Length: 305
Image 1 (spheres, rainbow, N blue to C red):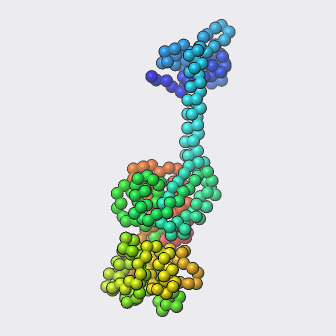
Image 2: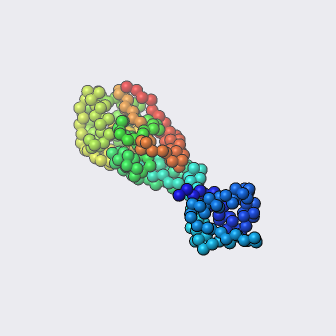
Image 3: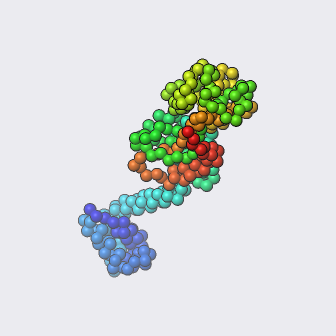
C-alpha cells in the first residue's frame, strides 16, 4: 500500500468542504490534480470514499470511517513535526549529565542557570557518580553526557576537552608550607598525607608525582571523597594533594591551597558523549554553556613537565 499525505489531505479537505472545487481552492491546487489524489487514494484502499452528485459530494460509509482515522493520522503527524521543530530550535528537550559530586557543586548550578536563561524550555537533569560509573552510563546511553576527568582511550566514548586543572597542596594555614607560592614534590617527603583510595585517578597522579620526585609517601589516612580529605586536613590530621578545583569545597580561612611543581601535573576536564550517536541540539547548546562557565571558573592551566 502506497498512501501519501497529499492524498489524505486532499480527501479530508473535500470531506470538509463537500466540494472538489472549493477544496482545490482552499488547498491552492488545480482541481484535476486534487481529484486525481482522491482517485489514487480510493484505488489504494479499494473502496469508494465519496458519492458524487451534481450539487454535492457526500462521504460513503467507508469514507466516513476512514475520515476519523485519517484525521488522527494528520493530527499526529503535525504534532510530531511541531515537536521535532521545537527540539531543533531548542524550545523543548532534555539533557541528562553525569558528573562527580565535587564538580557538580562547583560548576553545574551556574552553568544550568546560564543555560536556562536562554533556553527555559529545556530540562537539565544531573546525576552524581564516580568516574567509572559515569563512563558506563554514557556508553550505555543511560545519560546523554559525562563531565569530569577520565582515562584516555575509553572504548565507545568521544571525549571533548573543556579545560585543564593541576594538583595543589592543601594544608592548614598554620603549616610551614602554607606560606609558599609553589611547592616541590620533594618537600612532601616524610609529611603525613591524607590521600584518596587507590581506585581514584587523583591518587594515581599523587603517586606519579612522588615517584618522579623519588620520594616515598607517608600515608596517615585513606578516604573516598575529596570533601572528607579536606575535613581531615582542616582537623590537622595531615596534608593532601588534590585538584585545585577542590578549593570550592573548603571553608574560607581554614586551609591553604598551594600549587605543586617539579613536576607540575595537569589533567584535562572533559565532556564525554557516546561514540556513534548524534548529539541533540539541546546537548550541543548546553555543552557550550558548560564550557564557557567552566573556563571562566577554572581557566586552563599550562602543561609543564
